[in-house]
Length: 170
Image (cartoon, rainbow, N blue to C red):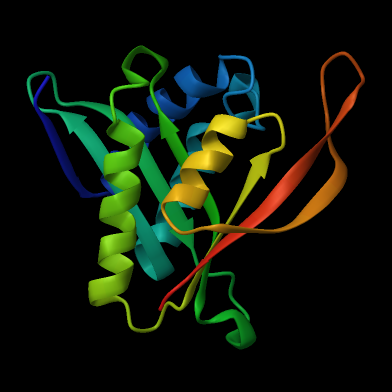
């Protein structure tokens, strides 16, 4: 597969919607279930990223399929104007473990480093059970900043904690 990355725009909403639904259909894919992801939700998310954040997609050049994306936005209040938050990264289940997530995340951070002097901090939250993702985030410069205990209620009624993580521009 030949992969291309590019900034996402609001016209990409249907492709992001397809991608998010595929990821959410997998156990532990996203916090939202596939049924909770609507085209309107995706449009709102993309609009926020285009207006005051960053959205990058990975496209399979032969099929034009969006196989991965990373989207983050600013929160709004001036005191947080240096922060990108609400970060969501996902790779289509059929394309995972091929380095796509790493590539788009590194493209994202490179863009923040080179072209976004207004952004000094990037925040994300990871499930404590997703140790592979946490190790990856740490390897690219994120650090754990705390535990949000019993934040996630699993379908069986058990709880899981979230790990708050941040990357600080040097």
